[in-house]
Length: 166
Ligand SMILES: Cc1cc2nc3c(=O)[nH]c(=O)nc-3n(C[C@H](O)[C@H](O)[C@H](O)COP(=O)(O)O)c2cc1C
Image (cartoon, rainbow, N blue to C red):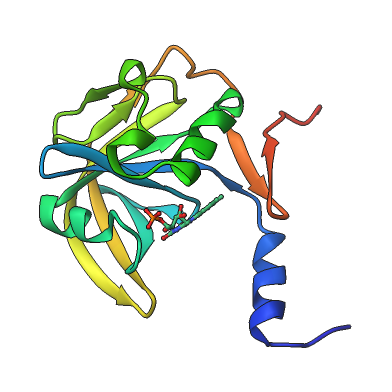
């Protein structure tokens, strides 16, 4: 048994959690902006809310604070290239012009994703290095890829969700 509580032990433990990979998107002075995030979780059904934890140093952190909206786009297993583009490009160059549209709130909606949650920010909380954004969902948008397996982040690698046999 290892009862370590160092920074590395924390990170190694968290790496064992498997999460869906999302692109959290917003608008920054009219231009699309966003980040890849796995710290996304449902909060309440009434009202329908999600929370997203965003590092205060992330380039789109202040854009979400200013715009007061974001979309959570759950990536499909075949969208690893989208995640890689978000990691390698900056600002609006993270977005393939043919692959997004504008949601009701003004947030970029990635049309190749599985589902997009278009949210207004209704609360923010201090989460130390991160801000916890509470988003009220104004629209849940399913895409042609809605039945695709989603992209996962597991043990610091991308993986594809697979439905386990009964
Ligand atoms: C799989 C994966 C999950 C991530 N999850 C989060 C997250 O939940 N919150 C967050 O602030 N950054 C997360 N990041 C880091 C951001 O995507 C981004 O790289 C970082 O904030 C720097 O962004 P910037 O280049 O826009 O400043 C994640 C990165 C990867 C690859």
